[in-house]
Image (tube, rainbow, N blue to C red):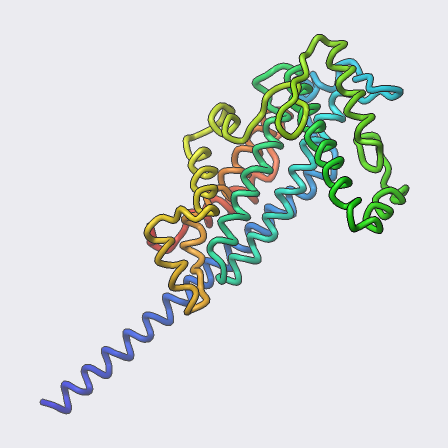
Length: 318
């Protein structure tokens, strides 16, 4: 009986090991499939950021195309161009961070890194969504876009101020970049552009207030947008606040355990990354649904459906 028992235990152990190997292989396949889907969404976002959007004749996007030009100092910019540019900056930022998220998924080496990147994806998508929000008027969209431009120009001034102290070579690189000069603020005088926007706003009787970091035509914040934009389904605030708290060290029990364990094993399983990185899903969902309503055309339908299915497939993990 002893020999039979030993053989039975050995068989059970081999079967158990085989099951573990199959489970690990299946988990790796799900991880790689999701990472590939994230890369595909990133490629789609890159195209949305670089190429003109297709739109229906009757759509909020077409209304913006027909709006009078915005007179900023000695130049005029079409409203639709301003909205497109300020939204595209964030679309391309989301695309870049999506590629980073795919890298972190494949590596399975950093839970907090992935959570932080997912939070950045959500934030970029939320800003891109706010600028083209079809539930408000053209003037309100323009106010949001110019507020975002004021923030960007103010950041440019702060950057130049910091670099001027001990990195003058970097300043010269910025100032000499004549080949990338454009009407939206690149390689321009940010202080003058801020004054031009202020003058335009005052001419429209839009009050301009001074916030802590930049002038504002309309008050905008991630917290406010995540609670008030249309097409929300309730997870957006969670996607933002959970990621925010975790990056400041307020970890839930399961993440605290894994963060501690990962110091020894060097592993952050993809299913745990997915669990705490809902911003990587909620942001693109919100933006693509908003873009479809704004333009009257659905973009990246197949790519997003595949991404969504794989994002919520954790092989039985909850």
